[in-house]
Amino acid sequence: MVNHDSTSGRPPLTLWTNILYGVGSIAFGVHLTVLTSALLLFYNQVVGLPAAWVGAAMALTLIFDAICDPLIGEWSDHTRSRWGRRHPFMYASAIPAAVSFYFLFDPPLGWTKGHLLIYMAVMLMTVRVLLSLYEIPSAALGPELTLDYDKRTSLMGSRFFFGTLGGAGISVLALQVFLRKDATHPLGLLSRVGYRETALAAAIVIFLSIIISCVGTQRFIGSLVHAPRVPGTWREKFRELSGTLTNRSFLALTISGVIGAVSMGLRQGLDFYLSAYFFELTPAQMSYLAAAALFAAFAGVGLAPAVSRRFGKKWSMIGVFFASLFASVAPITMRLIGILPANGTGALFAIVFVFSFLAATLGLSGFIIVSSMMADVVEDAAVSTGQRSEGLLFAANGLISKCVTGLGTFLAGLMLAWISFPQHATPGQVDPATLRHLGMVFVPIVTVFSAIAIAVLMFYDIDRSTHERNVERLETADEPDSNERVRASARVS
Image 1: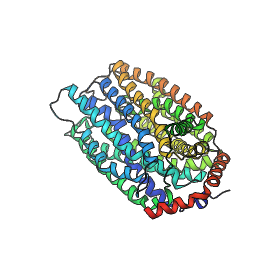
Image 2: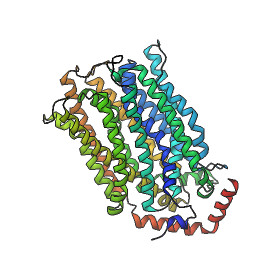
Image 3: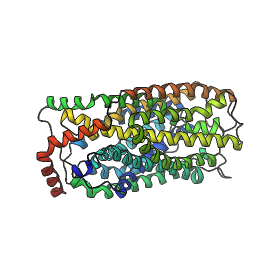
Image 4: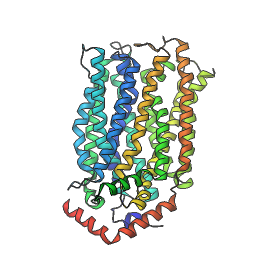
């Protein structure tokens, strides 16, 4: 087996490198968790905007962000600087992303609903674009750190581990400290001050995680980043873009992401609604579910490399995603058919906790493997185009998925409006028929879209041997000038 780390001239992929690279994903995990789980609830139940309005604004801003993503990725791929291709964007995003995130959850008082909707949309759009300015170049850095088929899964595992750590950590902090139920705030989840304090903590964490990862990986710039070749004509540029974006395996991952993002957006947008109203969990219990994600991160990071090494990436990913789908809808289905214990009982919470842990562990493993599969597409596409386009591939993969995640969030808002879910609702006092209607619509939509998304991944066709042939072909073709490019990059740095 070829040792790709040594033959490519890259330094060894050590545990410390994994950690430094992965820490940056804390920012993404924090912002994703707060936006998908809390933003709809905050602006609907606390600020008082109609759920359909909020869902529509979230969808539109995601679409705008998704249009910007490929531009950021392509810009990053073709950037030449003494800081390399990725780090200028990563550094530039840190302060403005943190500041805008805070102000998203500190809307002005006394404004009309129309003006508040505009404020939310503008701030949310700003947050999304600034986080993409960091996340896309950071994700594109991963395939450059190692070419090894198995080590990439471990590297992506680190990325997802810290992302999950950030998301779970901010959830526990918010629910146990800022949004807890007490004498002053009998409905902790509806505390306006609590959301502002949560946003401040999240903003600080976002800034620190970005800076730590940037500083920690900066020393690798000289040996990892090759100045890209810029096509001489628009026709040549278009040919390379089309060759990259029409790669069979890339299309399989992207189409799957498009379909699955509807299910994911719906689940994330209704997460707090299901926990607080459908199962009537307390903020403390919800924080325990968030804490379970911390343990799921450890389990998922260990499970993904093990199963992918044993069964291959594609079949491992399909298996864990189907199992995760079952675990995610099982408690709601059990309630609908009348076999779940009553709300407020310890048995109910135990069942929800176990299935949440299993769904998080399996889902995280699947996403780790999918990210590793996308990293392998880089070399597969480069064989036909002659151009490494990590930034474009990772951005384009998320483009339509972000649009459809926005659709999923929009559907969540429409669903709440359709079933006439009340605003400023108190847990335990919502009409049971309304809650049952919510579950009966939620489960089939999530199941169907998730199952189709998993099935599409059958068309992915890069395995271990294919990947290693691609790497060897690229290194053989690049041998005459690769060392000079590395030395030149090192001198500039």
